[in-house]
Image 1: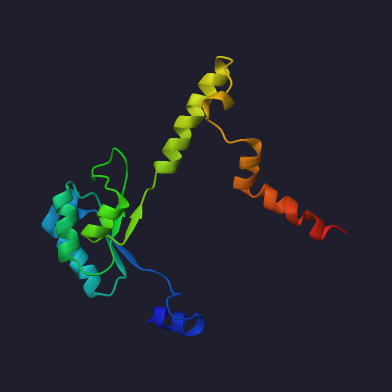
Image 2 (image 1 turned 90 degrees about the vertical axis):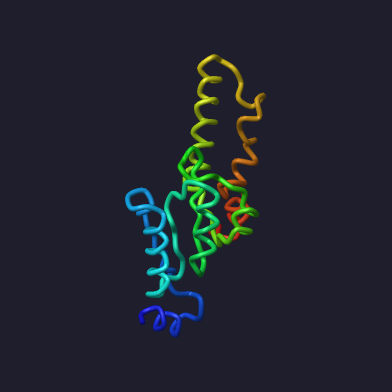
Amino acid sequence: DARDEYEALNGKGTGPLILARTDSLVTDGFEDAIQRCLAFREVGCDMTFLEAPQTVEQMKEYCDRVSGPKLANMLEYGNTPVLPPKELKAIGYTMAAYPLTLLSASIKTMNESLELIKHGKPTEDKNMILSFGETKDAVGFTRYGDQEDKYKA
């Protein structure tokens, strides 16, 4: 197939990952969702993703019954219990996605910072922000500055 050709040209393990997802648990039940994941594996998908298991027991059963790598979607305040990475690995998950964690945390901190600014209070006293040097490091400005002399005319 196309993945074999790609790997022949670029090396083993370099081809695309085929992730097969089902959302049928909510509409058609847990057993239907498991059957879909099993069918995905039969036709050769690399990894399965059962969207929105409701309980840790469902998560464990999915991992026990479906072979191969599995993705856990860890969405705070979502339908699936959010488990620590070690526990996810122990029950059989291979990868975990935290799709909104950093966005949500940054929005919360932005709102808190804006409230402080609105009321004339400093943000740096509350450990809400990075120092200027840490910010430059985080976005790569320090590294760019270190390389600047190398490229001067």
